[in-house]
Amino acid sequence: MKEKKFVQEVTLDDELKYEITKTQREGKITCGEATQIAYDLKKPMLKVGQTLDVLGVKIIECQLGLFGYKPQKKIVSPHVDVTPELKKVIEEKATDGELTCIEAWHIADRFSVPKVKVSSVCEALGIKIKSCQLGAF
Image (cartoon, rainbow, N blue to C red; front, side, top):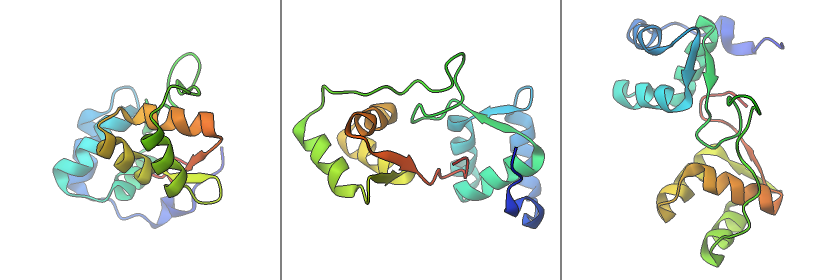
């Protein structure tokens, strides 16, 4: 596995380290749990992700369905039954065939749909989701 550059550069936040250590199970934490820690402690998501890397805690169950599921790794699949409005917004927000993780989350909130539905529509449209807020991809 390729070592991430920032791992050596991160100064550990004791409060963040404590919450991660308390929440993780067998060296794993869900995307939702990591997000909740960031929200509760008012810490940037990327800082949480960097701390997870330093602590060697693996992120599982991506809320967009892109990684961390067993046995198939990802659970997202192309979704073709979509409202024209949702499709239009996704296409408008995508740049060069890519949509950021945070933008996918905003779209899901705006349309009151599960995050995995947005990524499923992206999959059907050939749009790649990039820039995980936790730094996983």
